[in-house]
Length: 211
Image 1 (cartoon, rainbow, N blue to C red):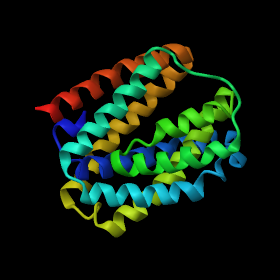
Image 2: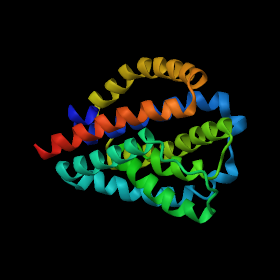
Image 3: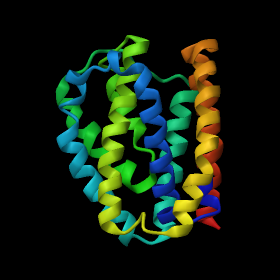
């Protein structure tokens, strides 16, 4: 939604820093449930993906980026909304495409979660382990992206830094509300709510790029 109002070179670093902050806060409460054995195969290929995504973010024109982001968000939203989730256990070899695509998409759009979510959903079935492992993954991969973005100069903007500071209280409120929703809603209900939001966001981004 922010991509409607601001350039992606502003939005992506902003979302990255707020997301890492949220993961850091959440991780202090869930770290004992993190499955590090599932995360270790992802990290080498995540690094390659982050480098590729940052290069594309800096060099590609806006319109192709918006079209790609819109299609990506729309498809993932439909997947959530229609509850198209398999539970079959998959091989660890799937960590390679999941990490490459997750790192690339994360650096490009600040939202590399879906490939990781799909992969880990097929590896872990305990709700607490899954939530904690996502948090640990996004914290470490996010720290890597911050380092790459600093080198690329994407975080060296005073206006961006002030915007991030202003957003942190909203992040704290979101964590509070999200934690209550996590307790009060079933996983299927939460997936459908997120899916509906993503479908609307993805469709609107494609409309903007078309115009």
